[in-house]
Length: 268
Image 1 (cartoon, rainbow, N blue to C red):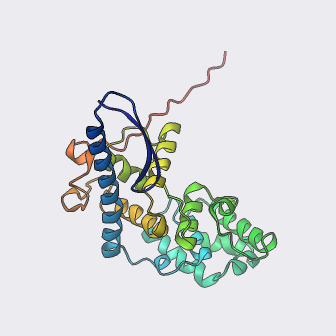
Image 2 (cartoon, rainbow, N blue to C red):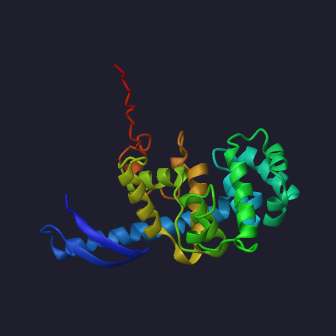
Image 3 (cartoon, one colour):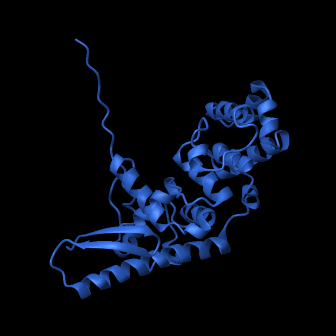
């Protein structure tokens, strides 16, 4: 097998390569051209599929950062159909970040009732007050600012920054792990430190930097509707001609999760 060190500045652009074995230059060039074609095909087809097949969800008709942030927090550990109902409730009762900040914790928790994971509601309230009191009511606009909000991690900060402000930062959630692992045939465990870093870097390299928000929503939607955990719709998949997992009959094996060994404490 031939190995290369390839550095990519952004999608479809390879600015440096180092030959590691004695493969002839023409063969190397063919491999690189195939790589470029595969990457370009992935991004273009993904966005095209999304624009024709995306679900009609209420947070998809806005780029208001407060509403996008609200939807992302609600959808953590929550099904879309259930989360949609709560999204409508919160937008109706607290239409702005100021309204949420001025509400009492009791009001917020009552509206959140039935959704579970109540720390999410408390984090929403805390962050809303932080935005009003410390940021003078101005919602954070960048990944680095957003990730400072309580309860906001890499995924949520990337989602809000890209969807609302078109910042070129890739999202990586369960859907993204699954799509990338299968399409590129990656066996690195997605819950390992190496895997988390590897998939984030790959997602960032694949990102359509001119349409960051659309690209991010496209890959997540594709994972939710097409490249599903069980019974993926490979027969109608627009990427099936170049999917490594499908060609190698490994769709049901990927992505791989590392088995965490629990260490039992023994007392003598």
